[in-house]
Length: 428
Image (cartoon, rainbow, N blue to C red; front, side):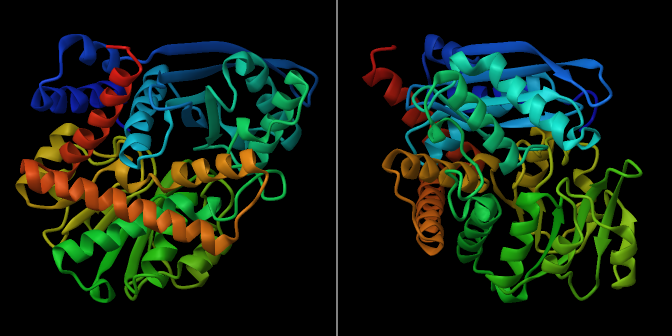
């Protein structure tokens, strides 16, 4: 992400464009352009060396007209309030476009979790909950894992909340470990959801997935399962993945001319998405510069890392072979780059549709927590496929009806649903 890239300004500009097309009233725009509530708080953590460190935490609740706020918790050294605001807004649209009864929220803290011990991470997670628990709950705001956080961390947070309120409350957090209120299928949900939308887009574009290739940015949870799904479910080839190496603070593109083996790469990748370089080289992988993924001669680009990766500065480097961009990450494409992609007739599956699989299964997890009845793995993935397919087709139909790009169509579907909920509740 470049220094001058502000995700919240991007989120607002995307909303403003579609709000104009929908002719929304001024007061409606004002409500939806900004979060309903924002929290910033200190987290004091006792470190292993006996000192105390203070971290800053955030929680932003953008809109809860359709139901409790929903959104992940990011632990990242470059986290900012504007990043969290943008992600909270996108979560509102994501839940609405997937047609699940939740609103949008997001949280985080400014730190590098890989620099902390297990004990320090647990104390940090419990401290994060201590700072915000009065504004969380199964009926008002339900966090989940995101960049830099894990199911184990969600388990600690759920336990801390349960102790604070005096009752076992698994529904306050989703993305928990299976066996501690978590849902089967949650780990692969976002990545597989990306692939379900790619599959539907290929049908629309009349592409045979077995002859298609992809380049993936990132190799965290989303990118891993998107890569696995592209190979195992669609029968295509992933030619490379680009990921950050936390050991030498550099991003590399790991590539193979005949296609990578995502299961193998997953087996040599740590929990923060860093691939073991020595093992990759020994297996015949070539290490290229971190931005090489973007220029590969492939049919599909899957940015599945962080925001602000396809910009005016690099969009012209995208190969003429590329037919589709599937946004597995949140906000990976700048508005200026979006214009170029549209001019080149590259089909874009917008982020809050493409990566809605995670929040969809998080919703399923909440339903299971409420019922105290847990579904089989195949049942979860079957329901996920149905939800994602229905959402994609609804957005595609809107794009055809209004003769707009998929991103604008997704906003139209989502904004319309949120505004209707606000009207029905008497907010307007």
